[in-house]
Length: 283
Length: 283
Image 1 (spheres, each protein chain N blue to C red):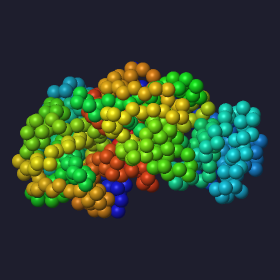
Image 2: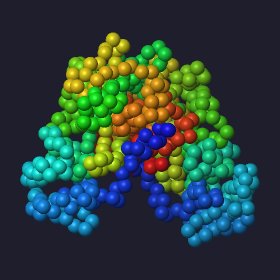
Image 3: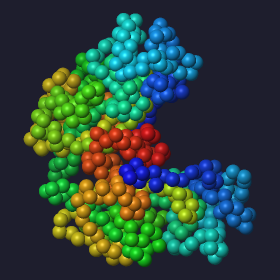
Image 4: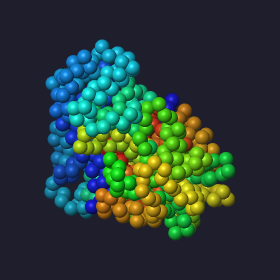
């Protein structure tokens, strides 16, 4: 077991097994061929080619495209080709959230291989004997990764909420922090990966933040996502990441990035260059 | 002018213009075709192929290889195909310093396109109104980047010195820090790039460190590399990096990495994903 294995686990997709999903001349997603074939029911929405799927060129503006995709997604849920409608709109984009070409429900993001964006926050406390990290245990009733360990606060970025708004919201919902404490969070970089999941591929970008918390603050989850929080010595967290798959998959990468930035993992490691380089996919 | 331009400037090499330099089955360097052609004088040291140069397979151990290369380098200096003998041994390696297959004089590293390793230290002071960074101005008599701005402390990693030994040595020589203060330095990641220079290609790895200095410490250069130090507000340093080429080229990347890790540059920037991803080459 190794830190590099945690990174590989999040980069297990073979993108050659997928068909690119185009809007005009830009790739905005990746589809499994079997899923792509099911889209032939909507010739007014998709153009199916041998090596690609294209959003129909007649759908030429943001709203037309979003409406057409939404109708398809709802139908695919009825046919059980997509699991659940989550009523949260995600950007469909060739690059960043700001470059969104239209929207799609969060529940269909993996099936369409659309890049999801999120914010993951490392909550830590500086004690005399070193750094401690707050680690959450996800509730058993979660659809995604029930019972797994989680970053202090982590959430997807829906369209239309600014980074700062979403950060304050997630800090409140997931850890019970008020806006004043949430304002202590500092951006510290990003990780990216291309993961194969049961539902499709996830070529995601997670923005990483650090929040140094005063020792007296005890996080309390308000939205039921996290069952309990534990404050652990940073070396214990590192050991869990290195030796187990206890953490929800992408949280491992956020922690490895934290461990590198704070010098817990240093350049005397033989795998250091590889660890550092593989936390982010080429842009 | 932009931060991305600074990164591009350090990644201006077209590796296709170079011939790979092999030791056994591993690539350990990259040569200009004209330089490679000059090596035909030493058929007992190099095997020249159309698309590659190989160290002669009869040179089968570390010392044999190092001695043979050293003799060639000294001869190439006499022929003015290499500038100067620097009497500092660098690793010739397909990966990390620990995987060195032999040694070569630092003066020949660019001509042979061998990966150089270095340590760059951001020295900073936390004041009430924010972060300040110590910036050095290189002496005008330096061979490399005279008069340019520089990181607080920066040095190449010769073979045979440990990371910690070299760090303490460089902190002493370049900033006059004693070992106790140097021990405050924390590893914080790495940057890598493939730069075209006058002498050849540099596919380098620089380990980045942060050292938070007490306000009363004034660095003093002891080895003549830096002429003077200035403590600058971090936003001023960011502006110099973004808008000028005042810094020695690779120092820009070390500072951009610092600005990202400390949240001075944040994910609301349109170029954030690209900035983060391009600071390191794929491993």
